[in-house]
Length: 186
Image (cartoon, rainbow, N blue to C red):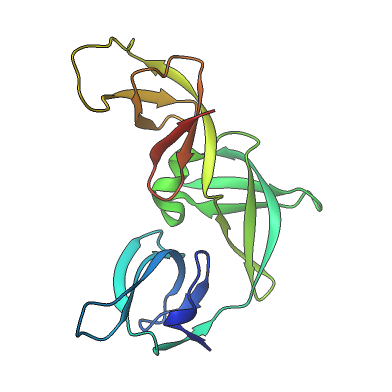
């Protein structure tokens, strides 16, 4: 059993609705006279849905014992993404809807971690950030702006994110896999 106060990013447990979820972010929060709460952003590993909720620090949940094995993304079709185990060369697939919005970050030969529950392949886990190349964006023209101005850019995986004006075609940028937002130029 695990207490809500023991959550860390990446913790996988079974929530109160009997769903297998992973902690994306957590925050211990306490207002002046109120009891403390743990606010969490969870990813449902079955559906890919993001859930925001809060728990009391003493709430207990069943922690899931998982095994992680390296996988390499090979290709995708309309419904599935296909991965290869880098040690056994076994090919496995995951429904794209199970990966949620993160499926848009997949590029050929990307290395990920495969998640196994009870020695059965379940899904893949993305790293906190990925580096992708900008393949299309408008030229950045500096104007009389006071704050950071962002422009749309299409990345090598096909996803479109907002980037600063100084980013050009051919640049590599780091994208946060949890929020799908620009982090920095690499």
